[in-house]
Length: 325
Image 1 (cartoon, rainbow, N blue to C red):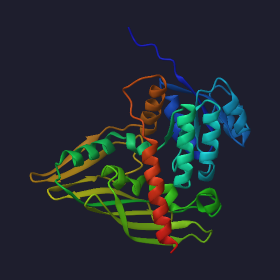
Image 2 (image 1 turned 120 degrees about the vertical axis):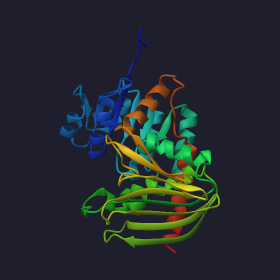
Image 3 (image 1 turned 60 degrees about the horizontal axis):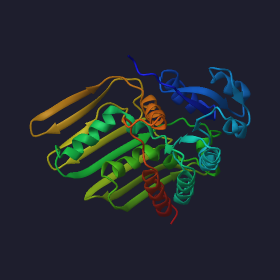
């Protein structure tokens, strides 16, 4: 007899590209969650993302809807925490796009609200749910490549229009906030949040005012890390870990954005090279399913801790402090 599942009723706050390309198909293909309603300033776009046709042009009306159980927020970065807090106080569990906040204090405030209200609140770092990402961490932590000595990460793209919200610092734009939760955060979680020390930070500024390209070098857990983000460099993605006995590298130019495509992991050791292959998957769906399962009281799920988001926010603050000195 198959298990009867009552899907979580999701409400979207934000009906832009990320919602359309990420969580919309994830929930449309899920048995654990469903899109109940969508709120967007553009009513037509909101309605187009709502399978039921239920939509709002006022965000508050969506979080006041008693039938909405969980809220997904994909607004400009500067609005993440204000609307997350409002949604939690309205009794909703919240999945919020990365970066979770503009600074560490915002994370602390929202974490306190989550504790006070008993609501589930999580940053949508979807790449962490990819089986290849999990496998890389498993190999490193098993000791197969020996003691980690060097980590290199990169996530860049180009062709950002000047009027894109990612270019405006007042909206939380910039390469570090947009791409840092992938490439800059990766060495930190991989090394189990060991203490960090920034040794070098370089920036190229976008003429609108935000950070366009950031390169940061830091030590962590006895290893040296180099992380790069940019909104003005042709698409370049890699995640490479070098140890005393070998290395593990994500194959292909898709280290942090593998989505519905096959992927590979290359392992170099004493016995040469081997390649592990991973079937196409949707990490957004894996993440949303785990979130919905947690809401339904299931234990077979992983939820990223707000403590991790706080560490990332603190590190980003430290990087910005170096860049502005």
